[in-house]
Image (cartoon, rainbow, N blue to C red; front, top):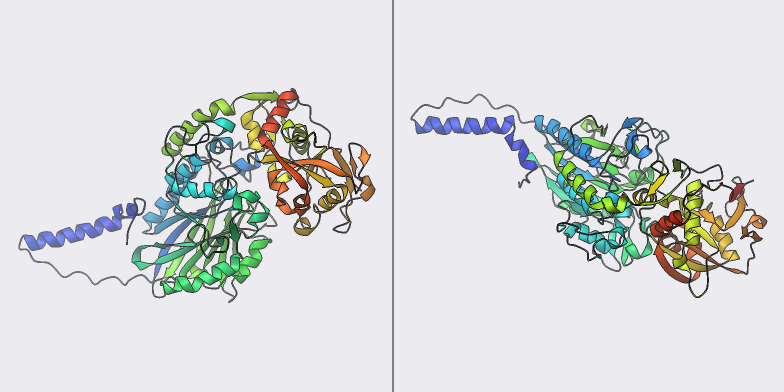
Amino acid sequence: MAFTGRDKKWLRGPRAIGLVAAGAAVVLGLATGGTVTQAAPAKPKPTHTQIQLLSINDFHGNLAVNPPTSSSGNVNGTPAGGAEYLATQLELLRASARAQGQDTATVAAGDLIGASPLLSAAFHDEPTIEAMNEMGLDATSVGNHEFDEGYKELLRMQKGGCIDDGDGQNNQNSCPDHRFKGADFKYLSANVFYVNTDKTLFAPYTIKKFRDGQKVAFIGMTLENTPNIVTKSGVQGLSFKDEVETANALVPKLKQQGVEAIVVLLHEGGLPADPKAYNSCPGVSGPIVDIAKNLDPAIDAILSGHTHQSYNCSFPDPAGKPRLVTSASSFGKIVTEVRLSIDNATHDVDRLNTMANNHIVTQDVPKDRELTKLITTYQTLVAPIQNKVIGHITTPLITKTPDDSQESPLGNLIADAQLADPSTVTNGKTPVVAFMNPGGIRADLVSDGGAVTFGAAFTVQPFNNFLVSMDMTGTQIKALLEQQFSGVNQASNKVLQIAGITYTYNPAGTPGAKVVADSIKIAGQPLVDATTYRIVTNNFLSDGGDGFPAFTTATDKFFGGLDIDAFANYLTAHDPYIPAPTDRINIS
C-alpha cells in the first residue's frame, strides 16, 4: 500500500511506535546472544476496520469568513465557515480518527468553485483549488458550477497552467504572482461524456486503499440536468447521462477489481422539511429521494450536494437495507463525518455499524496558518479591484428578498441596469424589456455607509455572464412568462426579474394559463402578439437555462458586455441610487 504525506501521519502514532520498539528489542536480544522469551498469545484479529470519511459540498470559493448575520455565515445562529477554520476543523477530526487507529479520507460532492466571491473569482478560482490542496482533499465530483467558465477551464483546474488574460483586464488575473499548478485531488465525472464517445471528461471513479487491505471506491457524478442550468457554451461537446444508470453500470466493474465498499459523491440533492435540522432527516424531498431508491444495493453510501442543505438520512436501498444519504450545507459551514465500518471477512461495509455526523465548522478554533497566508496574499492582490467605490445607495442594503409577487428591489435594479446597458444596442435596435433570473442574484447589495464597492457588486453577480439582446414576438414573450409557472418550474415558480414590462398573474391559476393575458404591457402599452420586441437578458437565459426554452426561439441575437459591468456602470450613472418600488409584477 502506498501512502501520501497525509496518510503517513498514522505511522507516527502509538501503534506504529510500539511495533518498531518490539522489533528493535528482538534484534537487540539476538545480537547480544541473549534469549528471546516466548511472546504472549496474539490477540484475536479485529473483525472490522473503521475508516473515517470527511465530506463537504458547494464551497463556491468562499475562502474568507462571511458575515455571521448573513445566511451564508452561520448555522442556526452559530457563526460558521471560513477556509482557515475549515482547515483546522478537518485536521482536528482527522486527529481524532488517527488517535483511534483509523485511516481517513476527505472528499467533496461538487461546486467547490464557480459563483465564487471576488477573492477567488478574480483569479479564475485558482485560490480555491490551492486552498483545497492545502486542506488535503482527496477527490471530488464535478458540480454544475464547475462549468461556469467552460469545461476546458475545468480541465485546467485539474492540470494547472496559466491563462493569458491581460494581467487583470475584465477584473480577472490568472497566475498573478506564481504559476498555478492545478489540483492535487482528483476530479471525478462518471456521467459526463464527450459527445458520441464512451470517454468521460474525468475518471469515473477512484479507488482508495486503506490499511488491512481494505479498498473503497468513490464514484463522482454531476446532476444530469446540468445542461439546463449552465451556459450552453460551457458544456458544448459534452453529454450528461442518467445518474442511476451510470452508477449502477459501474458496480460490476468495481467488483471485478475486488471492491465491495462503494461510495457515491453526487452533485444532486434534496430539500429537508426543516432546514434547521442539519443533523437529521426531516421529510427530505427532491431528486435525491428517487436516486437513492434506485441506486444498486451494492452502493453503500451517498454523499450529496447541490441544494445547499444539510441532512443526515438513512434511506432503504432497493433490497430494503439502510443506506446513508448525507449533505453538508454550503460555503464550508458544515463537514460531514462518516465512520465506515468494514467487515474484514467480506470487505464490505457493515451498514448497521456505520454512522454519520454533520459538524458545524465553528470559529472557536485557531486559524490554519497556511490558509491565512494564502487568503492574505490574494486579499492584497485583489484589493485595488475590490475596494473601488462605484456608487452609493440611499439605504444600508438593497435586498434580493422578493415580495408576495416574487419581485425584489435588487431584481429591479439589475434588470434596469441591463436594459440601460449600451453594449447590447445593435443596428439601431435598443432593447425595451429586460429579464433576469432570480437564481443569478447571489446576495443582497450591501453598502459601507452608503458607499458601494465593486466587490459588493460582484458578490451580487459573480458569474461574468454576457448580456444578449434579441428579438421576441409578443406571442413568444407570453410563452416565456408562462414558463415561470409551468414545465420544470411548475413546482417552484421561478419568477424572472423584469424591466420595461408589467403584468399580473394568478398563483392559483392553471399552469400554462396563469398570466392574465390583457395585463401584459411594454412601455405602458398593451402587448401585441404579432409585434416584435427587442429584449435583453444574460447568455445563460438566452440558451434556455433555468427552464426557459422560449428564449431559444428568439432571433437576431447579439452579444454585448458583461453583466457585472452593466451593473457597476448603472450604479455609477445613478449615484446615489434610490431603490425603486416593487410594482412591476402583480398578483390577482
